[in-house]
Length: 193
Image (cartoon, rainbow, N blue to C red):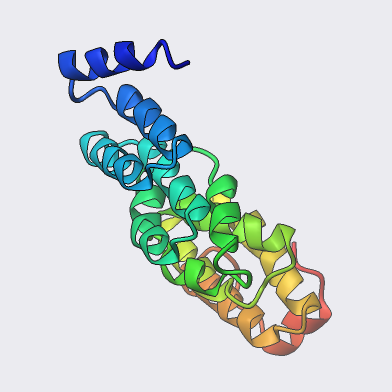
C-alpha cells in the first residue's frame, strides 16, 4: 500500500479531477491520522463529481470523525443525487438522529427518496415522522405505484394508534382521486385494500 502512494499522487497530478484517486488518497490520509487533509480531498471529490459515491464517502467520514454538523449539511445533497437504495444513508443518519426526526426534516422532495425513508421507518416501527413524507409522496408519486404502499401505511398507522395521521393520508389520497371517499368511521372499522 505504501508503495502505491507515489503512484496515486502521480495519477492525481496527471488527472486532478479523478475523484476515485482523490477518495483513495483521502482514505489513506484519514488512516494516517491526517483528518484535515482527508476532509479537503473528500470535499474536492464531492464538488467535482455530482454523483452519490463521493458524497456518501464524505458522510461516512463525518460519522467516523463524530462531526454531526457537517454530516447534516451534506445529507440532503447526498440524498438528492442518489439513484438507488438509500437504507445505508438512513443507517448513518440514525447514528446522530435515533428517532429520525431531523432526517425526515431534511429529506429532498423526491418520490424514490421519500418512499425509501418510509420503508426504512416502517421496518423499524418508527411512525412518528411518516406523515409529512407520505403527503409529499402522494403529491409527487404515481397512484399505480404508491397507492398499495400508502394503504399499507394507513393500516400500520391505525395499528400504531395514529388514526389522525392515517386519516390525513387517506383524505389526501382521496382528494387526488387515488381512492374513493369514506367516512372516518369506515376508515377505522374496515380493512383497507
